[in-house]
Image 1 (cartoon, rainbow, N blue to C red):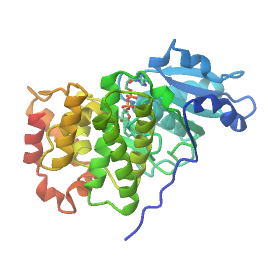
Image 2 (cartoon, protein in one colour):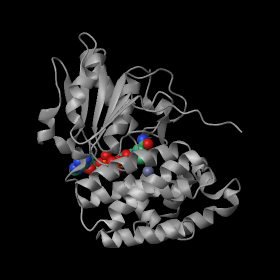
Image 3 (tube, rainbow, N blue to C red):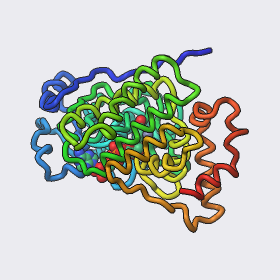
Length: 357
Ligand code: NAD
Ligand code: ZN
């Protein structure tokens, strides 16, 4: 048995208003003549948060388009643009949801690694550390702030740059930044965390480390989406910590069926991560009976619409593509169903599941 020896985020600051410490936190990492680059979710273009970014001298604020989940081509373009404009940069600071944080991690790595980010989609392929990188979430749930991966859609696969160089050097967890996110978006991203917990806690890779974080994150999600009568500041506080703990839980375990199936949807149809997981979770009673029951209750209580019938009219070839992508997520299936997972989740069974979505 070989135990995972995983790299964690370097520094963490948590608290309402902690964003105000950004200037002070990054100051020691500024290198002469090299700018700090702020990659900011395009939602904040023209919003008051932009005026609070500690821009100095030749620093650059770049609004990133997260209409679609990050692609390797987009990462390459951003890194190329920065290299042409500045040669080198002091650091990359991502301010936004999971998509923006993944872009920031990937761009940081591509400032110091040759070729295309597509060359590094996989496990431990990244050769050199990236430039200093900071993650500042404005949505809670993905756990991208703590993970060692950055999920990218490339020319042939949707897979992260999963490496010890990928985690952020610093994260700033300021729940104020998630206030006023639209209720649907907040739910989909929050459910990503809930689903991480269920998949981790019900998985075969579970150990006490994962369980401790997973149980805490699950409890926080339940407080937010089951117990609370209406959304308030405490919900933002709790969900931000749930996301962190959920991410820590899967660091030592793995996600499961909902993620494995949702990756297929995302690859073929471009379905976004949070909503895709919800669409799949809605049909997973067989694998996670208690979790799915509670999930359905939360959907109803929070008055959220989960799309149905998204696979209607797809061709055999389309289904094959999704099945191939999903079946390729071996560690997820093994975590969910055990070593003999291929006997349990056959291509036919997976096809039936996709047809229901
Ligand atoms: P997102 O980053 O894709 O953003 C969703 C939408 O919310 C966007 O339109 C964005 O502009 C908007 N938004 C962001 N913050 C907002 C705010 N405070 N108020 C209003 N709107 C806001 O959503 P997400 O669910 O956080 O992230 C999903 C992405 O994260 C996917 O690309 C997925 O692959 C990735 N992911 C990564 C990991 C990892 O470990 N690296 C884990 C899970 C998911
Ligand atoms: Zn997820």
